[in-house]
Length: 467
Ligand SMILES: Cc1cc2nc3c(=O)[nH]c(=O)nc-3n(C[C@H](O)[C@H](O)[C@H](O)COP(=O)(O)OP(=O)(O)OC[C@H]3O[C@@H](n4cnc5c(N)ncnc54)[C@H](O)[C@@H]3O)c2cc1C
Ligand SMILES: NC(=O)c1ccc[n+]([C@@H]2O[C@H](COP(=O)([O-])OP(=O)(O)OC[C@H]3O[C@@H](n4cnc5c(N)ncnc54)[C@H](OP(=O)(O)O)[C@@H]3O)[C@@H](O)[C@H]2O)c1
Picture (tube, rainbow, N blue to C red):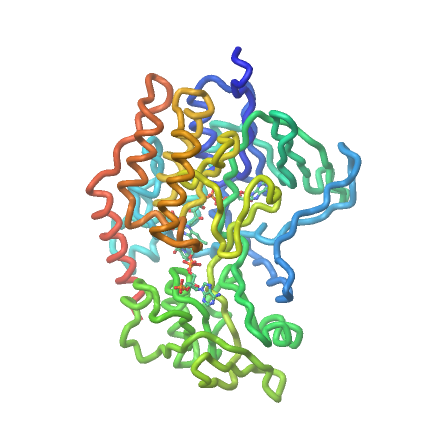
């Protein structure tokens, strides 16, 4: 055995990224120990629906997600610390996928061709989108293949390096149902972080929001707690943001809310999907960025002032559709830095910690074609860890990040894959090399993939424009 060989690997997170990681690691037929830790009691990640949404934390200047202090003496049982921010899924009960099959899948396993009756009514038969329950069932069926490797209700609280080993500080949440958590450590040669990045809300700092929250906690929400259209009936609403969450939400609540529905856009114009869905729709009114909000005299409503000094009065609800942040509370700044622009620094191909590929990330990309990109990233990581594939020199990895920074800037959207899909996928395929009997060959990015994505978008436009 080579002294630097990897025998044990930990995976953090039991969503689609973690699933792709298990498949790829197992395919290597090499690692003696593969362990996946998931803090929920079942697999599926975002595709496991939570009936009761998460409450928005108080909008103070504190970070909303903080690492827990581990007890001094491990292992041991300690009073439970409960569940962290982002524990609950932002999905809602009638959610449908928005990335078309056959791409929103692994090349080796596809989601069932089942369309929900409501979606067939709106989009016609045999469309490529799937109801949340169908996606969750697919993930959970796939997870059954790896049940001996997975531990549920276990939150990874700290990951740090001691010598050549990665130490994971683990917390089995309320293990014996007695209000106590069981804390302990386990060590590994490598760690794959697959904890998702659509769970901890990105919350703009707007003066007045804390006062509103204190007066009535229901006056402000993040879109992650949206559950049903009826909750917005006859309300005068201000939404911040024009991403897909906002676009979906607007198209759904438009028939029931007070008109116009106000949407604040911080930049020059709304995002393309939003614009193409609602341009010219007189039920909507676009506003610039929100400068401040104030409780109205009756204490039941609020007023908003915008960056052009225009104002709105008598609003019922402020909805932040402002996206999410990357969050690795279990990693210290020594291991990885998420900078103030919500960009993860020092990663090669958005995957490997530059200088130490024993720490890697699956799914830390935006719009990369979920599931498929996780498969490609996980395959590359597994082959690098098993020494069947190698990475370029550290200097070349640094240059990769520097070149992309020059092109994209030091911004959150640094991690967006389009329009460079082909470059990204081809890089991974080249680095991963052939399967040689272990796992499968990664197909090059197909020219038809863009057509599939565009056809999917056109179908979604039909849905968004329906009112
Ligand atoms: C509203 C919404 C709709 C979306 N719709 C689509 C869509 O239609 N199609 C699509 O392809 N993508 C969609 N996405 C993107 C979605 O994030 C991906 O589909 C996919 O779920 C990402 O998989 P993941 O495994 O990386 O993350 P997740 O699905 O978020 O899974 C991460 C898992 O890690 C666990 N975890 C986190 N931290 C810890 C810890 N410290 N210890 C232990 N476990 C931990 C979590 O509990 C979770 O189970 C959507 C996102 C949002 C917000
Ligand atoms: N399956 C489905 O049906 C479904 C439904 C909802 C969401 N999703 C997925 O969920 C993911 C997240 O989408 P998202 O729309 O929640 O997030 P997002 O894509 O990050 O969009 C966030 C929006 O908020 C704005 N914003 C961010 N910070 C702001 C600030 N400080 N002040 C004002 N505005 C701010 C952004 O402005 P800019 O435009 O200026 O950047 C953008 O318009 C996407 O992958 C999406 O496809 C899928």
